[in-house]
Length: 355
Image (cartoon, rainbow, N blue to C red; front, side, top):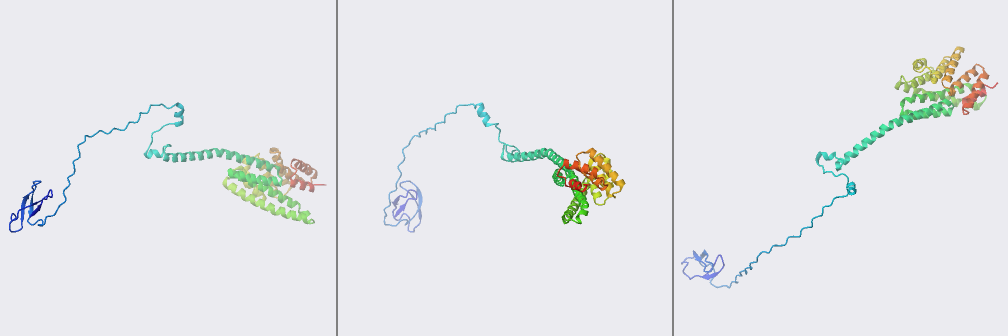
């Protein structure tokens, strides 16, 4: 029978009967590779089969390893020192910084954000610090312009004075009292003209219409000025401007001006506007001879302290008209019109003072 080697797969024959009558396993030694293995009887069929010859690979001839050439090394860079101009262009060189410090270092991304924020805060602080003195100067400049307009005393100038005082009050709230004072002066002038036009309004419809407009506008201005004066004195009860504004408001609205005049006189006894208010307060209780004399003395003090305060001259001339001292009234009113040709009240009183 035929047996196949388990190692080299060689096929060889074994005589019948070596395995015994019963098919069993028996040990066989290969004649080619000398491998010993167990074989079964009847392992291969009787009919011989042609097996393809086993190819044994031809051994590769031994070759001595050849050392591979190493890659050529790059030529070493020639040491070169930067010029001073190049170093200046590069700027200061700093080592990279990582971690929490990097967030505050101006040469990192996080540090740059922090640096920009700090610079922005510093810029705002600088602007505020530099802006406050400038705002104070602007407030004083507007207040000075407003006071110059108030001295002229005509209706347009008083309107301009109130507007300028209002702008200055945004920068310096204490100036709100001066705005109130300008409103009260303007309103009281219109009310005085309305009273003096009353006899003419009975026969002249145009004068009657003018008088009604003066009464209406004068009442509105006095009301607005009184409200502003009240707000100013509540905010700064010891401020001279608030005290004199509140005193004028009380004199024009049947209040108690003495309550505000007493502390005002103690603070600024020579203030021309305080003297002007004292004259108005003297006449608020009734136009008696004694009250008129007191008012004239206060007006003289106001003119002495501020010769350009035209309201003091006009009020003195109005008192002269009431006392039928027309020559003195015309003299004073002509001086006012010469100083300010736009003064409507002075020109109207001058027409009423004609002989």
